Figure (tube, rainbow, N blue to C red):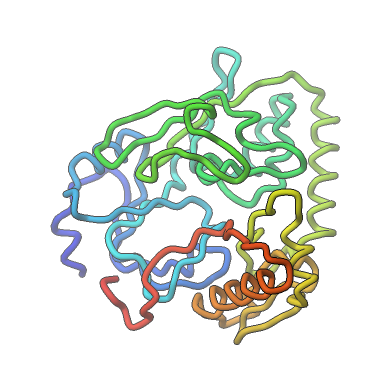
Length: 304
């Protein structure tokens, strides 16, 4: 059992040492989390962070859909926000926990007759992840629907901030890196349930037609550059179907990297960097990773 556990405070949530991150990411790759903590609620998280020694690193994740964990794993505490799932309609807003999957929120809103959140059915992540990167799809972004976000910082202090406060821009937020999002208050617009569900079905069908659903992938790999489409640049660079070991650029949508089975995180990241290099050589564009890459490169273990 890792000695790190002896330095951590008691919690109401679940604490476990040496948890495989491959079990918690859509790519299905990655080394061990030295310790994984799943807080019971916001206050449990805040109390934990306030009492945890400042020299112990912490990293939070949600669905693991937009995440590439390197083979050496993650040192310190990995915080799994999956139990932060409050849902409450109040004062003309819909409060949702950061651990809720975006698709869950879309379905909840449909049942409640709330329009404007249909696009969430097409985003493979959680509310917390969407806040961190201003996720979006089908013409709508998180900054368009969020009234206020709630987060806990490394000292355990609770913050609330608007999209403007967080400087939300295309696939970007200026929110402090030590903030762990716990909830968001979303705009409510009355809608007709059948029409809302019909729009959601259109989005699901469109996604299935255009993207490699059912594959081990991390979603869109690179952000679209100004005035362009990442997939077009990748295609023009001759990277559609390109492989490195057991990692592959999707034939269906070449802004998606796929674990064909048995790929390492190193293979996937190396393939992504090869794509970036070829795009730079052919078009002069420096593609920016949209997928978060974290952890230690050293598969022999490092500090993890």
